[in-house]
Length: 268
Length: 284
Image (cartoon, rainbow over all chains, first blue to last red; front, side):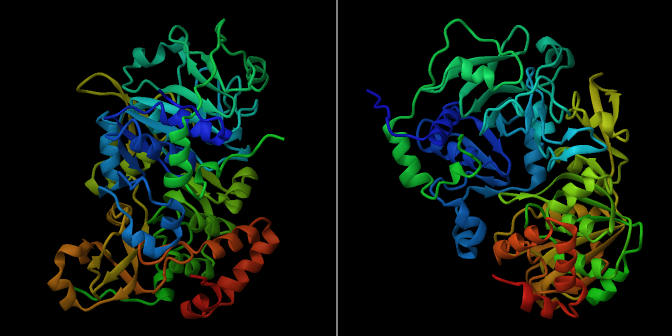
């Protein structure tokens, strides 16, 4: 009998929901600067997916009980830091290109109703109103990994836009027919996990669809915070809450320094 | 074998106005910062800067007015925030940004060091990067008839890389548990000339005893400089971490051009030697 937690934060719910998308035995890739996704992956590995192959940057299977803050700033922690392998960037890219990575996780600055992702600019490319840091792997993993999991720490209309200002990585254009027409290996964006809801994409037309709302969040609230009309099924379930054990592992073992909450800004 | 040792000043003299430079490292580690500060001190202009993941290296070269165009996948301070000079200069049109994806940047280097004109990939079809990069050409694969993208070879005039240790001939060795070694070797092999700064110079005898530790053999290296903490304020893992305190000071200063000019005066223009710089800048 699963015992659900009644004492968890929204960040912990997002972390656990992301972890639940990961299957045992898969190979996953994660770039830099998504702390919540690092913690979610480690949680999956110590619970339901012990054989998940985790490639975090160039670290293969980094120790789930290492505090990553200390790895970045403490030379001594670095010297003792455990992993199966340190690979080269080229080795990682070869794995992508061969189509052997099952999923990746990205955090877009903008996402539109077809799942197109923008991490490049707001406004015009040559004279942007806001120059973003750049897409790094987004343009690549949109094609080359099996599926993309999207994480958005704050669900709001400026992120969920009708049409992205710049397509750094494509989602499901041409009513969802583009990938099969072009023979693209990767299935593209599959799930979008936010602080309000879990969203997916309709198989018929590639448009974004509401899949579940987090406990205490209404369907209306999700729609109001989305800059385009979502596909909303008649019955929208509630997102499954974290278990007592998942919360204990997060707080005590995997992420005592709360790295998972680094990029979350609470709603006022 | 020829000895390659030069001073920081002589190393920066290799770079001319308008050159293209490739920079090693990523995500605030292994950046050849001592050489970059020296280039800024020499007031070099109109550089074309190649690096996959730029942070303080690219941002400082932009803020000091040395840069015309950047060829990058990302410029920012991971876990800290945006790169202030990069963002400002891109938004007001002072620099041109030629964005790559991670894979395509590395394939451009791979083409260069393999000596072929381009490398093909499935990536970026459907991405607007193809609209703003007219040098990336879509073509029909002669084998499968699929659409592919040709990424042209990246061949900078000069590569700037920072390594652990080398003998005077430029046989560069890695430290144990060093990561992202191909971010050093790929850019070094792709460029026409390579300047390597190292944490320390060792004897040729030591290299002869451990040739397996060499990541760049001497024939890949043109100029060699000894600069302990030469990556500061980026890190050299696992020898020393990024200097988070200094990086925070940098980002605060870079928020507006006036205070950034003060930063440059304090840590670049008025500093005579690298030792002097470390005395005032290093918190690790």
